[in-house]
Amino acid sequence: MTPLICKGADGIDRTFYLEGEKDEVDSVLSCHVRIHRNNPPDPNSDDWVDLTLQARPEGDLRVTMMRHGSRPWYARMGILDAAIPAAAALFGSKIVSSSNTHRKDEAEYRTVAAEKVWKRLEKAGLARYDRHQDRYYLL
Image (cartoon, helix red, strand yellow):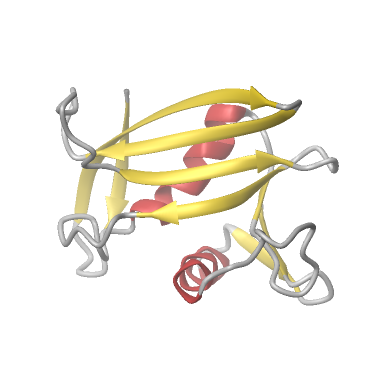
């Protein structure tokens, strides 16, 4: 697993551990990232942060899910802010957000919580927003 340094809302850097895998179902490539508190993680636990991405015809990966399961030890730790750029490096691909106005299917949407992550990435100079497509692009 890869160490992932995350800066929490309190300004403190913490180390988490990232692992990723690709799979293909019905000719659609999906990438799954899990971020754990411990290395190695407890094999009998579902204690991790999820980041799921799906390949688009444009050749990039779209974030389809971000979830920390409302666990307080993952909330406000900057994990997804660090995990999205790390996933781009891990999978060697550009990453984009989902859109609420230019959806490719009914399952595509960007939550308020996801919007906050992307806005922080934009503020840090790591992403740009395209208002015509209602989509963020990781730089």
